[in-house]
Length: 420
Image 1 (cartoon, one colour):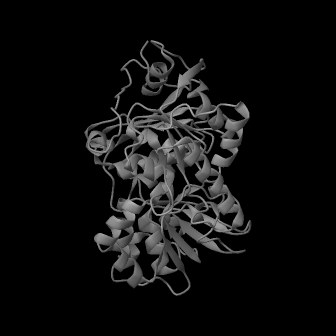
Image 2: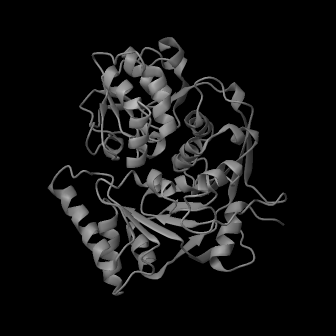
């Protein structure tokens, strides 16, 4: 019997001809990463092991992005620990303020992660890199500390679920709507410890930015990994930026899947995930009229240039509602520069939005947009759990950038066509 792309990558990393779901393996890691929240704990675990040096200073990435620029003394201390560790061990991929970005947008952009990699990160949204045809998953900081010392990790090979995307996207429908629809369909535990493999004709019209969004939220369905086999779009993205030679893996025709779902994308429309779970998905039209206090466009889910262009399309020539705060955060310095050069910042500023240097900030209720009691926000982020963006009695509605921008203008959740 054949193997899935996830099984093939894991087999290659543990030096076997084949692996099967449920098998425990010891695999070689290509890239290990951590941020300012998770790195200090991983560093402590590494030091307790007693190793004098990391397994490979070119295969570890440390990115201060969650509470940076430092929001308080504790955040500054966290970053100091990571900065000093990076300097001590000569970590090549350490990104200081002014060079950093939201980690899961930054690493692919910089060519640090390439197709065929096994990526282990002390952050649950490490699954984002599956959009490149890599196997990427989040782990705890202690596991990451062990990886930094040994370059290896033990994993249980996951079974795979296949999602076949058919049809063409309608106006204002994005990759965010596709993955929210899937999460709404199978639930937040519907893919628990499974590899979510995406296939089908619709992929041909999904740019890399949308693919990153889809794989980013695999964890919101409980997935161990989200993965999209590389095609010409992937190769065009990787060419010229990859710092290592890519390896391309593809599922066999007779590969075994635990489940297979077909989604007719032509039937989808923009959706919103209501508080307090990403599975509470409804069409935007059914949520129309919900008043909001804040709109946030950014994060590792939707802070890329395609997302900012979509927001600008809605905001051009319009003003943010006087009762709404609109916060826009490009995910990396490169995206920041590109948005500025394309004139998107002028559109945002004229509309009355606030623009920030790259940071995760508002997504996790860290800073740069924390919600007060009773406030509601529309956000292009990935989670809307209780207290996710601030006060436990605040509410977060997840959407695509079109919807977030349109709602910021209307002062309430609306379909983009009502603003345009």
